[in-house]
Length: 84
Image 1 (cartoon, helix red, strand yellow):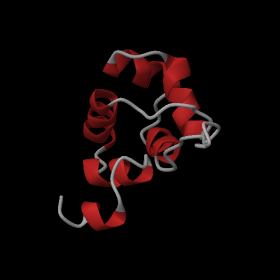
Image 2 (tube, one colour; image 1 turned 30 degrees about the vertical axis):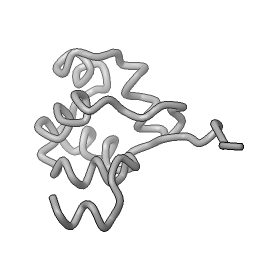
Image 3 (spheres, rainbow, N blue to C red; image 1 turned 30 degrees about the horizontal axis):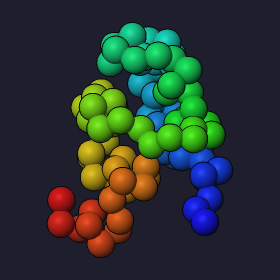
Image 4 (tube, rainbow, N blue to C red; image 1 turned 45 degrees about the horizontal axis):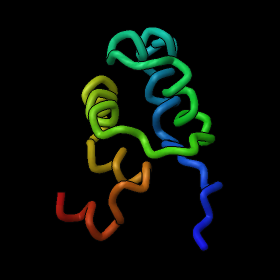
């Protein structure tokens, strides 16, 4: 039996956003998603994985390597991250 209660978060999102002086609403508007969707990932309480398109847009906006965000989001492993 799998555990569906695992929560997903990306630790570097909130510090990166705050460093740029952006509100969560501003980021959501810029990348075309809901503020509540992003908040779940910043707070580490999302029951789902982040979408690839949102992850890419955040990578571009925050100037964080996509492989780093994908690793934090649990999309790729450390071993896989070395190849990207």
